[in-house]
Every structure is written in C-alpha cells, then in structure tokens.
Amino acid sequence: MRPGHPAANGHQAALRSIARIVEDAAPPQDPVVAREGILALLRTRRPLVITGAGVSTDSGIPDYRGPQGSLRSHRPMTYQEFRHDAGARRRYWARSFVGWRQMDAAVPNPAHHTLARWAGEGILAGVVTQNVDGLHAAAGTEGLIPLHGDLDRVVCLHCGAVEDRRSFDARLVAANPGYLEAVQVDPLLVNPDGDVTLDQRWVDRFRQVGCLVCGSEELKPDVVYFGESVPAARKAAAREAFERAGSVLAVGTSLAVMSGYKFVLDAERAGKPVATLNGGPTRADPKARYRWRTRVTPALAWLDARL
Image 1 (cartoon, rainbow, N blue to C red):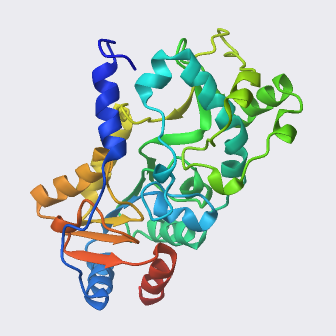
Image 2 (image 1 turned 90 degrees about the horizontal axis):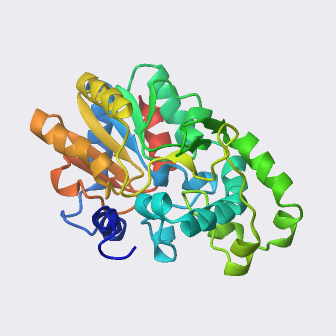
Image 3 (image 1 turned 120 degrees about the horizontal axis):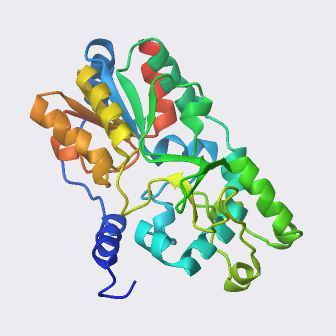
C-alpha cells in the first residue's frame, strides 16, 4: 500500500504485528513443576483458556509461528489491503476457493474435545479462541468466544449482508467450472486463514461472484484480519468470561497478537495467575507462573486423566 494512502498507517501497524518474532524471554521451567502447577489451576482457579493455532495442528491445520509455521513462507493479507485493493480481494478469494475445502474437511482433534468437556463441566470460566477454523464449535464447546470470527460466514462490506460459506462456495464452483480439478496444490501449503499460494495465472482465471443482496463483489470472510479491530460484542463477552475466571491459561498460542496477549496483561493487573502450554516460547512467558513447553494434545490428555 502506497505511503500517503489513508489506510497506510494501519497497514504498516498490521505488518509489524505479523512480523513479530516471539523468542525465549524467560528461563526454562521444570516440566514437572509446570504441569503440576497448571493442574492445580484447573482444580482450584477456574481458568479462562485462550487458544491459538497450536490446538488445531493435530487436525491438519498449520500454525503461524511454530517451527513449520505458515509465516515462514506466507504473509497474511492485512485488512487495509483487503478493504481498499480490489486486486488483493480477488487474489484472496482465488486462493481461499482452493484452500478452504481442506479447512472445511478438518475435524476436531482430542485437544478440542478435551477443552469442550472441561468447559461443559464448569472447570473453565470460558474458552476464547483466536482460531477461525470453527473446530472448537464443532467439538461442542459451551460458551465459546471466537475472538477473531469464523471462516464459515461471508459478509458484504457494502451492505452488511451475511452468507453461509458453503452456499457462497457453491456459487463459486458454479462460476468456475473445472477450476478446482485443474489446480494442483499441495495440501500441506494451506494456511491457517484458509487460503493457499497460487500462481498469478490461476488468480487471473478465477471469477468472483457478488453479494446476493446488493451484487457488490466487496465480500470478506467474517474474520478479523491483521490490522482490524475485534468487534465490540466479542470484546465484551471475553471481558465477562475473564471476570469470572480465577486464572488465565494460554494453550497452543504464542500470544504474539495483542488481542490475545491483552488477557495476560489484564490478569497481571488483577493478580490472577497466568500459565502457558505451548510447543514454543510465548509472549507471556516472563509473566507466567507456569510454563509447560510441550505438545498440546498429549499434555491436555495428561491433565485430563488427573482431574
């Protein structure tokens, strides 16, 4: 986005957020101490759980900042690019048309089911997810707050109309006969936001469809992009869940984005203990009482067996 554009500052801020590297900022903690501490929080301090892409990797969806994370080869589009650049929107929808069906085929893994059961049993104050894959909802998680939205809806930026993603996808299939059969894409290259890198020739060949209500092609997945604000209603719901919580537990997330990391800052101010369970370092590590550096799914199974 060119300097001087009204949205250029927001775009640059979003790029800085995307590029943030989360490195080790706290000494290693004995895994026994960490896991026993997290177990104690689950038993006595009713945590608010904040989840990220690391919860969904065992469902075949890549994470962002892990060792094999998508950010190593792919930069997500910012909201400012999507909103103000028709070419960028076309590129996104061509790529998402191909990549979304892998997201749609994914099913919840044991980590999703464990967290859903804990939420249903009242062990948790709530689950706030930064993921847009819909897998927590598919697992039946009660009181779920999808902080960044869900890929299963499409919203018109012109008139506000909302369409189910499967309905929208069927219209794209009709408008692009033979497209999916002709494109050859490695499923491992699908990104956590549901798109996949395509050659420009495939972008040029792609045909977009318009809003069912007003006809506009300014359509956007109903998710929060980098550079976009979380809707006020979701912020309020997350705040209510935080107030009910006695602690905060971050699972499968580096908390690189402020919308997730803010819960850690709020917990610190409120004197609520923080714990992290993640395969790599997190932004919260210097503030966390317990830091269990391990794979998410087996760790949740270990905890579940002892609750």
